[in-house]
Length: 585
Image (cartoon, rainbow, N blue to C red):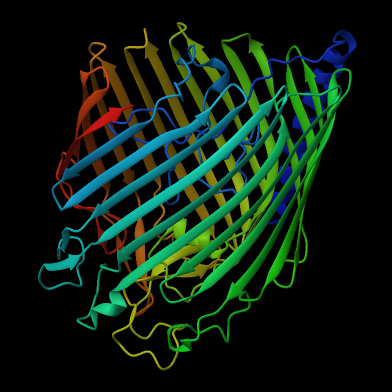
């Protein structure tokens, strides 16, 4: 570990000196701020539903293991992560026209596995300054899933499991824009009911196979959209409620304050985040074993990030530091560097970027269930500290059509966690729980320290706004102290998506997803572990404009009819189809 830190410090010193030299040369000639700053963000493509009318961004849950959630509504500038492939925001083709928010839409669909989809968006009031709108979505499936010995060697014969899921979301939003200032607020809620249908389910009272999550949010935000005089600021506060069917409730009050002061060719800024988390434990202690856990108290986390930004014609550099302090439980202090930048080699053609950063991830119940909804109800994940996250990459544009992003990175993670299947007799269960409760859920296994190296490639292409595709691939390898393998996490990931507008009325979508190198483990019989089946998921969608106000859509998912599991034991549906209609008004 000392050698790794020493090498990281040397790399950091070299990178900082190089960028300081570039910025110093720019400062001699620049007398004004360069407004067109290249911004790099995380790129997390989502397969669009074929019939979606993109009037309002869809409220999407976080996909497990793909990205990190953040309580903030805003997207922070220039924050590529080595575990999520960044996009080519500065080099993409001309953006699509902004959607027309004056129109609402309603969408309904159904398919096999007794699946239903419903969606509604309507703007109640819209002017140049004000927007009041409402969004509602329902997505459910009541079909069974078959678990086979081919995927789960411990089974002697196929088993049918009830894979019920019933997900509902609603959001009421209001925003007011006056000149360069914006005030916004929203109230949102969600109810997600589902079954624990996974591997190794004994025949027990059906009541213990059911779970439900209730989420409620209230958010207030006031910000300047650009500098006013020399100041720019963003103030936000958010209340979140998470509650499960077992009456465990967690309240989170999140506060985010950011300010920035502009100077000649630089700026000085700071960001303060505060998490106040309160846990209400259920009265039924038979389902929970909190007596030995050290992370079940109410607590507060303060995160401070001061930074100095140098801007010029050849690039941008940010020099900062991140500090996190936990009060009540957790890590008392966590300090990380926050230094990153980009250099323009050829305008609109070639850029390089690099950085050294880190962070403390607050892992409350809501965050954990977004990652893995099947986590056991009595597991509260400890916060995760990443002291060093080093990354570098290059972005290239070919023929004004194809954008490429090559990147690699290495991070050191203290106390990383991995999901492991909970099995009969595993430590952590309350003594009164017998063999029939909650064994198809997940616990977490912690490692002391870990190193994570990954490298990836992203390609983007657009042809006359008729044909476009996105290709991304990533390889990851872990260096672990105590855990044998990074359970449930893939070594190889590949994602391909393309869309073709045949005419103004007809559009086709195609998507393919591949994951390999995943392993699962049971803490039973000397840590029995098994290789998980690769994910090969091919999907096709079509959308046809039947009338000026009505579309019909058809989605064909898992065309290869593959049997695979996102989480070990939770087999996904095989080939499934959904069709429906969407109407704008």
